[in-house]
Length: 305
Ligand code: PMP
Image (cartoon, rainbow, N blue to C red; front, side, top):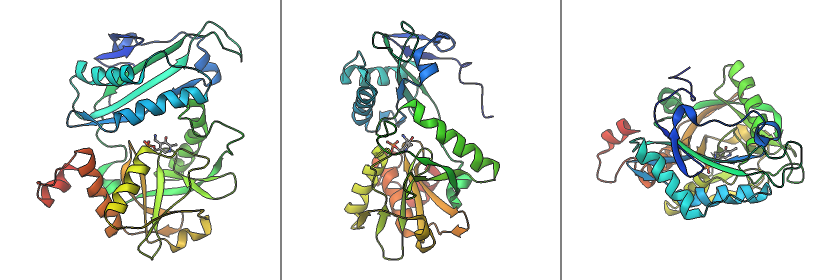
């Protein structure tokens, strides 16, 4: 395990309107969120002192809570400010932020209409989700036995804690088989996404193909990369992709706030190149987030990533 446990670190966490010592940012055992999954969260990144797409993340947090039937007692401006303050107080300029909102302990049962809604933001230095070596040659995915549920079975458009139980089961199974992550299909058997990132592929026609996000998160990075691709005259096709088509792909990559643009070198028995479209979009994304600037020569850009 890398570094100290997450509950045993120095620093401050924004918690219900105040900065508390990192080790004191606790919840009670009888917290509704712990028993019934009534929590929503965000994964956000700061690059060179600026939080990328902060407003979109704060808005999505509020929206996720609404989908789950609760209202975060802070405005979008206050959530933005809490994120900025959580970085400032810990001296972070390049890091990861975890805003989270959850139902507290007043009612303990399935119904929880009058529970206090809590809100916290932790921020820490966390440069790379997948290891730099894995990113350079492409990570490996294996198809999960778990599927993304249909929209009438779970609140699929919320970034809700409970939805990640199948992600953890899938990722553990993948790692036990020696793969980096899982490819998750949806309930219809269509290609959906990875456990915490969206998927794109090039299929020999110079276009970028990606599944329609009708039962999983339409990631902020996914939308950013679609815009970047179009700005580079790469056509993006959002469509149904079946697993039988994975053999036709030549390049595959994942997108996510934590994953950024991560090449995939293998899905089950299929192998892929880290090709030109992938490299173009990796660099374009690094520029968009402010990790590298257009003025930096290419060799120092690759060191920076
Ligand atoms: N899907 C899932 C399940 C995720 O957890 C994430 C990460 N938030 C994504 C997709 C990518 O979303 P984003 O680009 O907004 O980080």
